[in-house]
Image (spheres, rainbow, N blue to C red):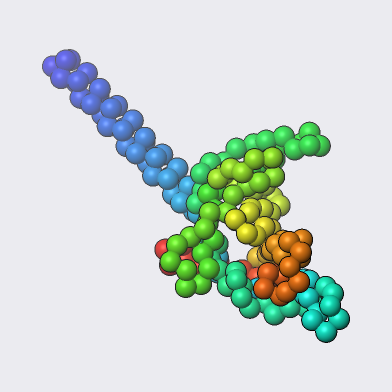
Length: 184
């Protein structure tokens, strides 16, 4: 009889540990999922360099905000959270993401990589209390503030190539982002 009672206690203990572990894993997975995010971003203002055919020189100009990367989707896939020490010696909570950007009507997403460390990596870190995210694609640099939902992007090609035309003008674009359903 004592053996049966001991066996029943052992089975209850195993079931309790199994249920607690399953609950913990579901909560951890839900927390990870909740850090995934997606935003629809739209450029609202743009300025840059433009070549004046009449003056035969480059000038600073307000430019149309339409065109490449004027409307896009920013997607953040949460990888991990951790603490790191900033240059001032303070501890910061940081979230690491894999970031992609998709232009409206594009068939595929473009990876947006971290480039601030001297080498390009697919992991982009965000200091949680600041909400700033910086990344680069093949042709553009982006800076997002996830708290204010604003972004700025820079296209730094043209002009330096010596070609006097407006086919490839350097520009800076500013705009806003709205959070959307990640599944869309």
